[in-house]
Length: 492
Image 1 (cartoon, rainbow, N blue to C red):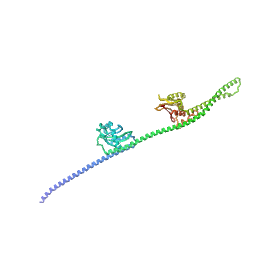
Image 2: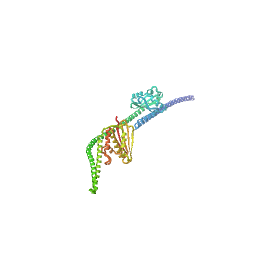
Image 3: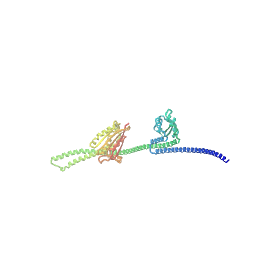
Image 4: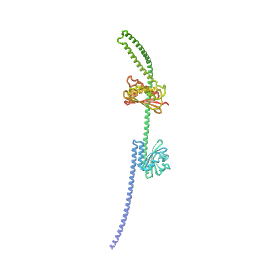
């Protein structure tokens, strides 16, 4: 009986164990599936996290690079090109730098895909400029996403190549809108985070470019103000010199008038005395001869002959001195009365040739070459020809003295523009320092030895050029030579 019972329990237990085993296996399969699902989900999350971190890293690198470029001392062109190249690598597509007013110009295009990039380069005439600019204004100059229909003209074939366009406005100048344009063939690369990064980068670059443009404008203004300031200083210097020369001119006129009268009658008396001495000489010569014939000499030491000869030399020296005084007085009168008397139209080149002929003997035995660079058919100037010739002569003689006995060259050059005829006289002489240049046109100022010059030549030259409404300037360096620059207005 017990044996029958045990034989019946054993199969039941086996069956029960099998059922439990099946249940356990199913439970394990279910748990395993849950674990696999959780593992896959975790992998997806990790992958998404890695992609997100990679994207954030790319965005950080993108913005860091732009910050480095934009806040450096790079030019605007370099900043734009750096942004363009970074957009290409960041978005893996084609990008263009475009500026437009009535039509688009795309001077710079780069891209990953060669075929798309080449088609973009050739499509600048397909851009619907007015619509794009209107969209930029409506978006208040922020980054915008447009469809190909909104960016290109309806008949453009580019709509089959590009589906979306992202426009990054940079700046506007002279009614031109400058922008970076990114082309997408489909929406697979359109990432909102990347577009936000693009906008951040655009703002960064836009601020930097506006700062650079402001710096350029300030530099230009500073340059213009510097030129105006320099011009004002030169004008002030000329006015000061003119006032000084006018005052000295009045003084010179008074001195010349006061000296001229006594010099005149002293000169007249000396000439009369010279005639008297000639008669005295004849008389005493006859008297001496008669005494010699009579073998009687009243002047054994020949004192009378000595007095006669010495008187002639004294009178001759007096005449030379008075002639020099008379020349100085004449120079003073010329200096104080350099007006517009007898103004005519004449060729400056012809005046130069005349002066060179007059002073040829002065340079005959000196190792000083005169070279001319005279522009043919130069406009005539209006003035007193002999006064301009006097200016030329004064400057050339001074140039010769500056070269002295050393071998040197004097170069005479003429040229003109629409308003002035220019004359430059350059020598390779000793030059002068700043102190000498400041006093160069002062009357009676000279660096020559006593008795060699009166110091009036350049003063007279200055007054003559001023009376001709011209300008005379000098550039000089010690041991490097001097250049006188004269400009005379062309008559209207």
